[in-house]
Length: 170
Image 1 (cartoon, rainbow, N blue to C red):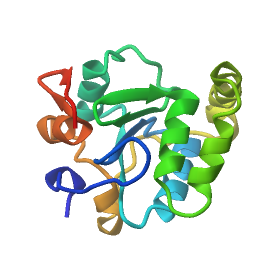
Image 2: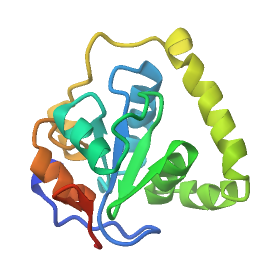
Image 3: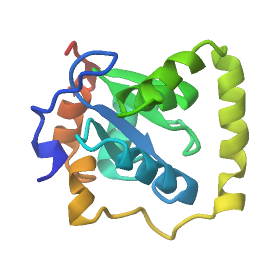
Image 4: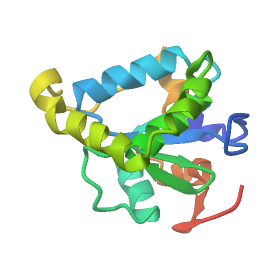
C-alpha cells in the first residue's frame, strides 16, 4: 500500500492528527541512514518520507515557500506547517516510539540557533564523511508504506496539508 494513497492515517503525537511528512536529501548517505533509523522506530508509519529531488518533493517545498531551500536542509511538514533543520528533526523524534518524544522535549530547552548551528555543521560535511548515492533511493515494497509517491504531487499535497499551494487547517 502506498502511503500517499492512504490519507486516512492519524498521528497522535504533538501537533495534532495526520502524518509528519519529511523532505530529505535523497542522495545523501547520512540522510538515508537517518531515514532508515527513523523507520525502525516508527512501526505505525506516522512519518512519511519524500526525497526533495522528486517532483512531489519539489512541489511541497514550493508550496511551503521553501523552493530555494538547500538540499542540506531537512524539512518536516505537519498539518500544513513547515519546520526546518533542528525543529524538523525534533518533530520527527516526537512522532517516534520509545524514549524519543521525551528526548525531543528536553532538546527544545536548547536554543534553536544553537541546535541549528550543530545541524548546519553536520550538514556541511555530510557528503565528505558519509558520501552520496548516484540517485535517490527507491523504497523496497516492505518499506513503501513509509514513503510518499515521488511522482504524485496532488496526493503529496493532500497528505502534507497543502491544497492549491496554500496551507490548510487539519
